[in-house]
Length: 206
Image (spheres, rainbow, N blue to C red):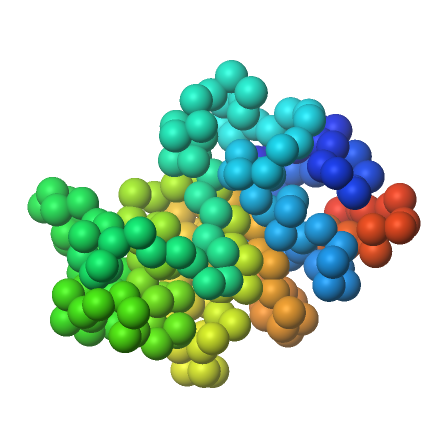
């Protein structure tokens, strides 16, 4: 479970909300309303005052590398710090088996792992980054436009994988410009108002 208490981020009103195990929260708001800033703050990548809890662990009392194993943030255009995707993955047998399953579920050829990141399409990089984000089963997954570069077929595969993660008990926070995607995946939503406003309220979807 993800629980946020009186989180203060520059430009946003204090935020408090919960996303339970197996729940997805859709994060909505106009461009510039602070959606990505909030997403990064949850993963301790953006300055914020307040409390964030994941399964009893509190962000301020957890070393940043350990926290990012609990809260995994995936940006719309993930950065790669290796020449090939394979270099970013661990090579232990269990991880390799999970990797193979995830690649297959997203219609990705294993051969892509050995290609230069620079020649991969944006959609391939996006899906490979999702595989990397999910491979060690983080309890909280924060996704910023995870299908923005994908066609409908591959978008459907990503959504199917996310539903599987929800069934397995993950908590997901989803930013998407596609309102229908939020409708399909989310149990509740958090609407951020423009930054000059002082309102932001979670709403459970019916």
